[in-house]
Image (cartoon, rainbow, N blue to C red; front, side, top):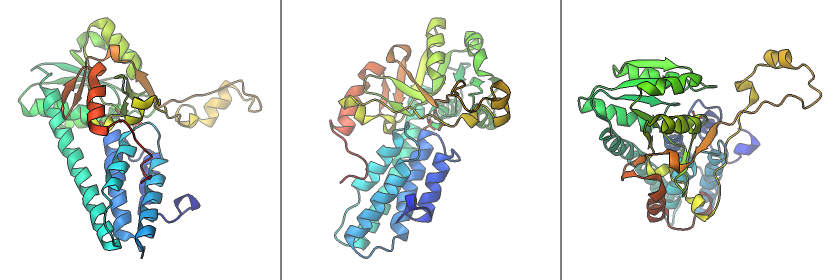
Length: 325
Ligand SMILES: O=C(COP(=O)(O)O)[C@H](O)[C@H](O)COP(=O)(O)O
C-alpha cells in the first residue's frame, strides 16, 4: 500500500491500478469495477466511528477517481454510491453503501441491455456495422439484433495504439458474426460497405459532443461524407453533468511508450537532451454533434442536440466532486 492509497483497502488500490494500467478498461466496465471497489472498502473497513468510515470511503473514491480523467462514468458511479451511504452507525453505513453499490451494478447491467434493444431497432437484417475501439454498450446493440434473428456483419477498426478492435473482433466472432478487421487508415475505404458506424462513448457533453476513443471524430466526419449514419451507444451514466455549467471534458494523454519504444525513439532522434522530438498520445477525441445521427441510451434514442434535456432531468443543474458530501 502506497501513501497515495493511505487508509484505502489494498483491494481498492489494486482496482485503481488496474484501471490506470488499462487492465480494466472501457467506461461501463470501469464504472462497475469502481462501484465494486467501494463495496469492498465498506465490507472490509475497520472504522469504529461513523466519521472514520465516511473518511475512508471518500479516500477510496478519490483514489479511484484519480486513475483516468475522461470517462465520466467513473465519477458518476462514485457519486451514485456515496450518495447512498446513509445511517447513524458504522453497521448501517456499511450496509447502505454495499446495497447502493450493488444496486448501481444491477442498474448498469439493466441499462446496457435496454439500450441494446433500442439500438438493435436501428439495425436491419443483413446490415454491416463499422466499429471503433471496444464498447460494451455498442456491442449490446449487435447482441440484441442477433437475438432478434437478424444477420449482422462487422468491419472492425483495429484501433491503434492499444488495438481494442481485437477485443471487439473476438467478441463478435464468439457470437458468429462475420468480421473484417482493418487498420484504422482503411476505414474510409471500407465505409462504402458499411450501413452504420456504431461506437460507444466515454462522455457525452451537454451540447451533444461525443468523447470517445481517439479516431472516432475522423471516422464520423468520413462517415458523414459517405452518407453512413453514425450511432453512438451510451448509457446515461456517460452523460457528463459538469458540461452543463461550462466545464470541458479532460482528454487523457497517455505514455509515449504506447506509440514508440525507446529504441524506435532513438532511431528517429537520439538527441535526448533537446525537445526536438515530441511524441503525443491523446487517448480520446471530441466528435461534434453535427456528425452524430443518434445517441442511443436506455431511455430511448436522442438526436445529440437534445441530450441536454435528459442530462438536466437526471442530474439537475449542479454537481460536486464525488467525495464531497
Ligand atoms: O473509448 C472506449 C474505451 O477506451 P479505453 O480502451 O481507453 O478505456 C470505449 O468506446 C468507451 O469507453 C465505451 O465503452 P463501454 O461501452 O464499454 O462503456
